[in-house]
Amino acid sequence: MRGANGLTDGHIFYRDLAKDYIMAEKGEGIYLIDKEGNRIIDGAAGAAVVCLGHGNERVVKALTEQASILAYTHMSTFTNEPVLRLSAELIKLTPRRLNRVYFASGGSEAVETSLKLARQYHVENGNLQKYKIISRSTSYHGATIGALSMTGHYPRRKHYLPLLTQFPRISTPYCWRCPFGKVPQSCDFECAYDLERAIISEDPENISAFIAEPIIGASAPAVGPPRGYYRIIQKICHKYDVLFIADEVMTGYGRTGKFFAMEHYEVFPDMIVLSKGISSGYSPLGALIIDEKVYDVIANAPGSAFVHGHTFAGNPLSAAVGLEVLRIIQEEKLVDRAAKLGEYFLKGLNTLKKHPMVGDVRCVGLLAGIEFVHDRKSRKPFPEEYKVGGRLQRICLKNGLYVYPGRVSSIVDGGDHILMAPPFIITEDQLDEIVNILDRSIAQLQKELEVHE
Image (cartoon, rainbow, N blue to C red; front, side, top):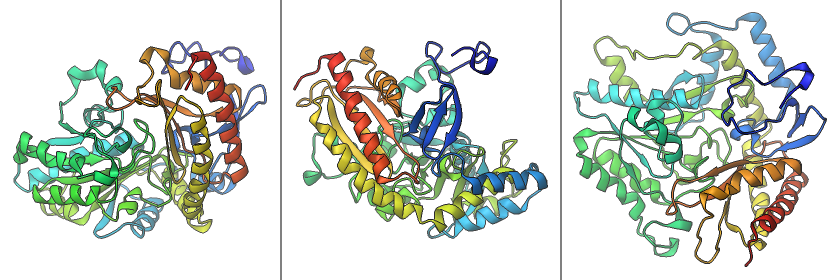
């Protein structure tokens, strides 16, 4: 991209140095508008972030009013009214003893916080060897070194392996590609009991926590385990004094039709990580919600301190935005709306199975994923060099839709997919438009790839 408004992108270090980037000039509801005036449906809400859509006047007003009063304080010395109000409102929505909130500036920071807090919890309890975090083979938990160490997605890890802690991983509850060759009707939850195998293999004295996305996001969009999975996980964690961390960075704040995705399974962890939708993208914000038992151990230890923090964590500007976003979600009943629209969206997406390259279609609330296959009968993925997800994204953009492409890391885990997570304010007619654009775009790509039934 060159020359927009007299500007050049020659000084920007982009993620993909071979890609042409679109100049987004304005956001309006579910749409992004480029410099030529083209309206593009933000079908992924950025990266499952902009849950209220673009240009929400109430959020903009809350942001500007707070900026004029107090924009920043450092949490090492000061507190402020917006963080107190937001934490109090969040705790009203949390179960059991999860009643402490630690603020961050984003998802990776909040996940990193959970790693360090789990470690200190065990140290203060006298379990000095507990430091390893178990995660799943198909997962993404963030871009910092600690969060990436917990991530299973190999392409995101491969360049940095010498820097990462080699934490253990277990099988993913990925029913459509079950690693144990089962189907839900005959499932014995081998994927859940794999956690106990890993804990014993690594020695329970070394295991600090288990982290999982309740319903998977970027690495396998909308893949969720069968009911009963998390009850087994929780029992295993309790048995071996392992903390259970739910990474709800993408699924939290109503994205799946429940405020927390863990509500679908009626099981709750020791920590919940939030970000993305927590501020609807209007200001950087993340949070870690913590069980009282973890807080009590730190509070009663010598020094009574968790020596950790980031510069912009807990700033009043972001907290004021987060508080207004939460009010809007509750007042407009947008979590229930996401649940109902998700049922409607899934029906539309299922019509895309008429295309031979469409393998699995998944949708929970307004988090959806389509997985593509070279051969539907064998479920064989396309070769990586075909870059199916990226090619489909480019076609969709030309047709007026933004989707989020990805690929999991091995044939066992699957291949190319796209993620969709539209704003909660979307209508049924607009969901129909997304399905229609996908229909045309997949047909076009299928013709390019010469895929036949």
